[in-house]
Length: 342
Image (cartoon, rainbow, N blue to C red):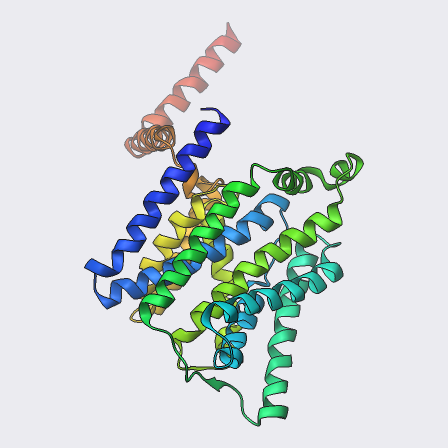
């Protein structure tokens, strides 16, 4: 298929997903709707994270920082501003923090960048905790103004759809090509005239905007929030895991993995937390070993290759257990000796 056909396919898939998600609350229970809300949250987070980090190969662990900033924005401002305005303010503050953070650390790569983004997340967490203790005299806030369930659901759905739509659009622009060029060879991209520093900061800020908006929208799920709840590093780590397992360079991989993770989370995390964490680790190991391109790279040829490999392994195991493999070695040694004497 050519580029136009791929675009039409992606738009149709996105419309189908949107229609299914819109109809879901009308024929399912509250539990399933809550699960779908978690799924949509991680679709937005992982799609936007993969847009920057997957293209540039910068491993950011700052998602929970931007999520927490958005959540605290809602807790502080929702009584003074409207719902949409509060979410936009949360996204804007996250962008401002991302620009400052990116200007400070985006000249680093690899482990150094990952560790520094995680360290800055912890710094923001403790700064908010100190501010709460010093100014308000307590840690945490009670949410007194909470929108209706459908408003929250539609907002998070809109953010999830928007994140996928932006990914579709960016991948077909010069900005997206610049991000891919940075991931392939940053020095070569610079020699070709790409302002890599500005592109990286813009991509990092775009990821932060979605994380902050999602945090602002999801904050109302808790009646009481505190820094350790909304700046939870697990949110950032799970976003990274979802993207890696789904396929960091793919468009639909994070969406597929987000659905799988949401089902696992709601089914296992409360009753069997150890099994849930083991499942996450097992999925990551299997994808690294057998699916480096993520779940989205699965094709019919992949299953055929696994089938042939399993069949060959079973044949080798059967020959070894029956002693046939050892007898073949002995016959080969005898033939080698006979040829030597001849």
